[in-house]
Amino acid sequence: MEEVLKAAKRRGMEAEIFTMATRQTSAQFESGRLKKVETSLRDGMAVRVIAHGRLGFAAATMPADPLRLLEEAVATAEFGKEAGFSFPSAPKAQRETPVFDE
Image (cartoon, rainbow, N blue to C red; front, side, top):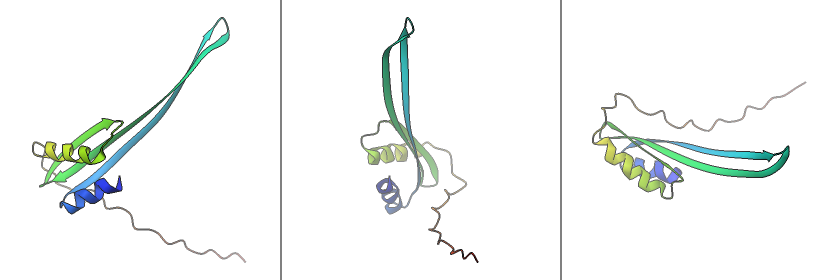
């Protein structure tokens, strides 16, 4: 994900990424006995960009190439609404404040 953000920044764009991971387990019973258990995993990713002052968006499940998703978001920005805002910047690392108990 960092590579997508860095690639957008190199091109003078703002970007934000959403990721999702879900795990679903189902159990099937027959005559009061466990018959089958299945688990499925799903990943997803969405990229939103501000390119040339316009919003672009792309999303995919199980994205194999996050940089391609960035390119797709940039392509949609051509038709996107004008962005009258900026994405928030990443928070700076906070230093841990020492605590002294007496």
